[in-house]
Length: 233
Ligand code: APR
Image 1 (tube, rainbow, N blue to C red):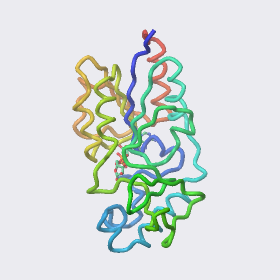
Image 2 (cartoon, rainbow, N blue to C red):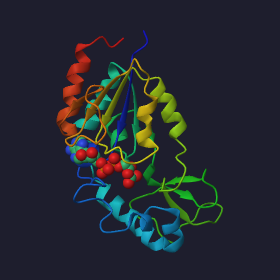
Image 3 (spheres, protein in one colour):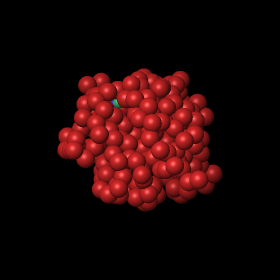
Image 4 (cartoon, rainbow, N blue to C red):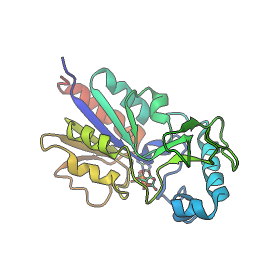
């Protein structure tokens, strides 16, 4: 029998308890940098070394991170539901937790890609990507990250998944960055919505979304209890 579909939109908050800083918290990940200097095509054109250093540092901070109960619980739900994760995160903690269907809207930290041909994508071994590291066609490699001002190629797939959702869960995102935040507009009318976040983002209407005001490691297992009690097929 066909399993019901749960689509989960995650943001930096789900990885916070794994030791990865969020973007807009007080210890925000931009670390004193102007966002446009380290995460935009203009920043890349201005100072490639600064951009590469910024992501090398993020890899060093993230390489030993382990999935937490939030990621692990979402992976466990796959036994009972058709779970699709749409993440804004560039870490691979959902995959490490065992989720098999993960769509990365903003790219992947441990991948590089050619500046000549966006289809040439390579794993970053270890943490460092340096000036002079080149693709097989001889052009400089850049982080495989979707920067501000760039297209979000996975958005079309994310919209299709959202349109098919029976349940839509939002975990740990301030919903400030588009187009990801706009996915909410594609949720079908029969779909039940949930949100897990210790700080409820502005504009959330609690009459339409069941809000669990808690951290991911507490709130996601709470949701799991709910999903185990209802019919999942
Ligand atoms: N559990 C759940 N949520 C948490 C936790 C936690 N332990 N700690 C913090 N949060 C919440 C915050 O309350 C906030 O709502 O996570 C959210 C993090 O918001 P942002 O820092 O804005 O991160 P995010 O929404 O993922 O940012 C979106 O912005 O700069 C870009 O590309 C970057 O993908 C990123 C995008």
